[in-house]
Image 1: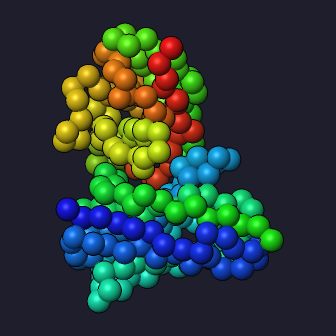
Image 2: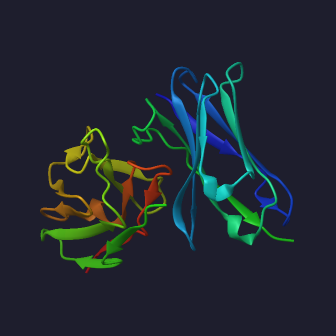
Length: 119
Length: 112
């Protein structure tokens, strides 16, 4: 069965760039849609962005120009970068799979990785 | 963005009794195709969320039939007909009609 595993730095300093990777095992990146969702005590669940294996992407404009997603089909990974982080970006970041655009079943999810923004 | 407002935020329930969670959207979440992309998710303690209900009232595969969803327009309800111990957790509504998808703040269900 398909499993997702997020990886990232754990601790990021304010104003720096957060980089997260989600590794897909037990299945292929294609032809699915891949999402990033975060969960913080202050804002609950927040949808960040999606991308498919062809590079089509949609970003939550709440993050303005701070986010970028990429997919590496050769490594079966997809990534998220979030620039100019502040304490408000402290959250558990999840990656998730969707079978089609707008389905939002998110099956499976990764276990989540906690990112803390602090100096 | 569409704001999803849930009530109550905390719901103590007795095993075997029914439970009901409400969700209201800041505007109608009926899409131009006539469908309403309103989902319900369950997050058990220490786990990632999982979807229970899509398009208001359709259960995802493997979801027990004690879970049901209803509603239209801006008002939606998730019902558990007879609460079991494994139902403890936080429940979220989520609209997928408008970009970006947005979640309610969550309702914590606990056994009294």
